[in-house]
Length: 333
Image 1: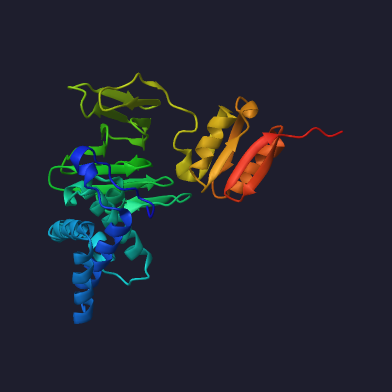
Image 2 (image 1 turned 90 degrees about the vertical axis):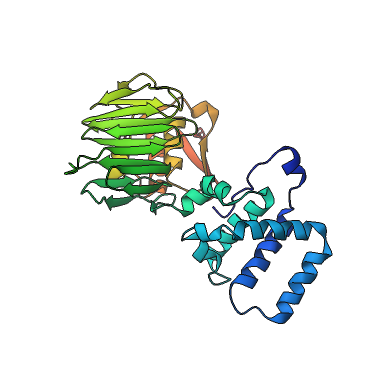
């Protein structure tokens, strides 16, 4: 999140972009002046900075435009922006506001960005972390690694918005008979008394039904919908729903801290394992086709990698602790 890139623009707006360094200066000036206790000398220096360059003034006008809407931006961003200067929340807030000034957008653009959605999440997990929540209706929500959700419970609806990553839900009966929806960037999954997983991929959503049934409805599918029954899985994009398939044997095992493989290719296994550890994890292309089966605990991915060297003709090569490649095991003369 600290490395959030500026939001893209084109045409005349792109020509008027503010350099990141200047945008950051404007944000820092805004924070200094709105944090309380700004001195006359600081205000004079700020005015001189604005007058030094037309780009400085353009950057200041942009942060002023954003600040006019900051009252509508709830915690945690507003609070973090005015936190202690050396704090991590303050640094992250500066990154977000700087990106906004560079792009020339307003608070509406900020709300649409993945970085803002992560800031505004009701619950989230870091890489390698899993978390279980009790929902207001008595149901259970489990977040997989690097995931974030926003909850909405009101008189007519129970909804979980999946901002990123993967979740497992165990729904509970509702005395008010409110529908239970998982909302995603590509459409919704409606629970029909069930236990199921939902994973947001780049451009599509995958759903696996462990119990009950789930209705999949794409955002732009013109009324298309498909109901998955227990033991089925399927995917949908914004425009349509794919064919239902038999549920993978290891579906949902991550909620119990396990990665289950059943004749899984090594490259696919490493791709899944890499979601639970920081850095790069890959293999020599000559090893990609190797198959493995078993249940592997996710609490210690280094131990999982060592286990692979016992099960397959591979060895580990560490460029650093965070850059690991599996290569063919060297022959012993």
